[in-house]
Image (tube, rainbow, N blue to C red; front, side, top):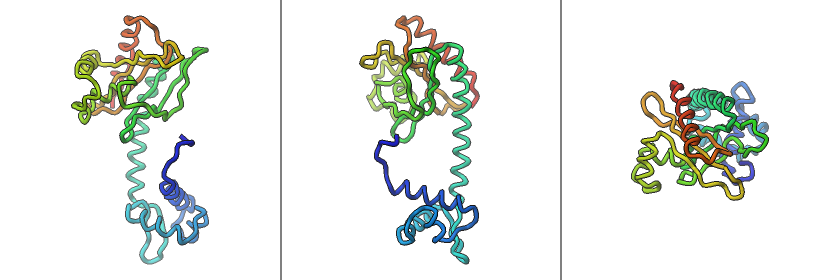
Length: 233
């Protein structure tokens, strides 16, 4: 992701937050400027915006800055989400070890999907992915089909034919059998992961050099589904 152009002002705002955290005690603007490498004049607009968003707090008596309460709630949410991801991925790692087939976990981030975890098999020849690899939210990915089928806001989008949606709901999984150009056997199977109150939290994936046999693919899908059903979210 480092070579993809982002929004510089967001990265600067994060550096300001990190500078305040690094100071450990409430900080003066001059201290934050020194730690973040910003001039005081440039820093001021970031301090104003971060205060408005409750990301930082300025004491009206001392004018010192500290981290705001919004960061605390975001931290709690991050711990909860990461705990969920870790729980799911531990099961996927066990499945990988049992089958010697690569597994992964995809979640939705905004309008995109992200392969937040990739667990490589121990095969000598395998297709490697990095964690947080973007995945297409369309019919070219097995995980994309899962989200198009089970997320309400895509239910009537016509991005995935109704007949295929019905089949995915019936089977409990989707497949991508179209091979990546120049890589024979590169296929994927994905199934939805739901919380106990039926909220879709992600898609579990078996991926890589999968067999040609439809029967074998179906058996792999059933093992993936069985593993995911053991998770209590």
